[in-house]
Image (tube, rainbow, N blue to C red; front, side, top):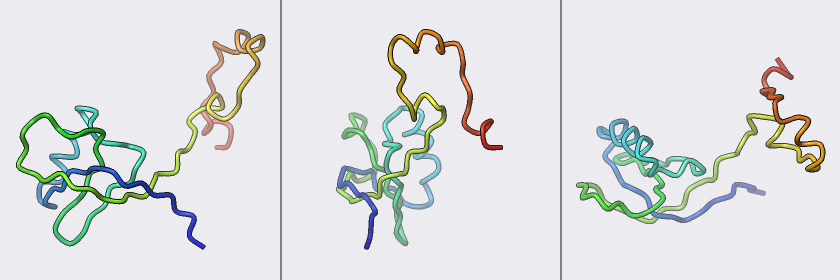
Length: 102
């Protein structure tokens, strides 16, 4: 049984030779969706994007189905929720999960 979660969305279709340059640009402009895994085939790479681009690019916008990324917590705060009366006591404590396990 396949538990892979997917989502169909718009993507920028970019030739492999231009992929890294465009990936950086999309990331810097906060256009690329980071919750989905990038796809590629033998000729192109497909970057899932948040919205259709207002800028004119010489790349096609297509619809693709992407695998969702597994989201890993960075902090215990992302895993647990504290009652409001306890939150004020722990606001100044920040522990990265890596420090707990390594």
